[in-house]
Length: 89
Image 1 (cartoon, rainbow, N blue to C red):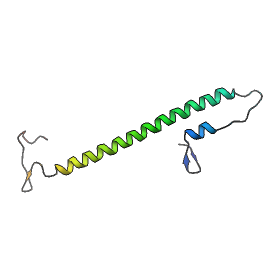
Image 2: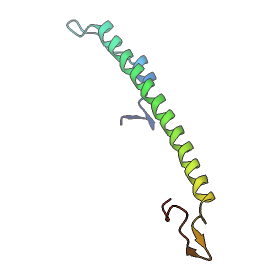
Image 3: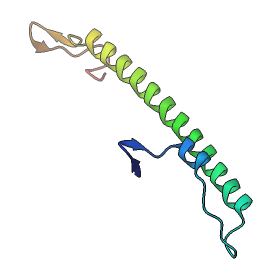
Image 4: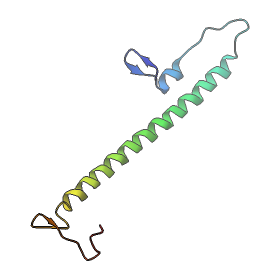
């Protein structure tokens, strides 16, 4: 990952980056157009990461709640007690 003064490189850095022009250099419109495409893709990926993290957090919370509710399932007097399905689940 590229860092600038402690911050990671983000879409904004690509959108505002300017390059010096030269007599036989690259076409500035093409370069800046490509940078805009990359910045848009980084925006999209950052949104996906945020969504995935939120979903992961929600699933982990649900799993913890389920585990807390089922901590004593299948146990009686500290010993395993098979349920009606033979102890599965």
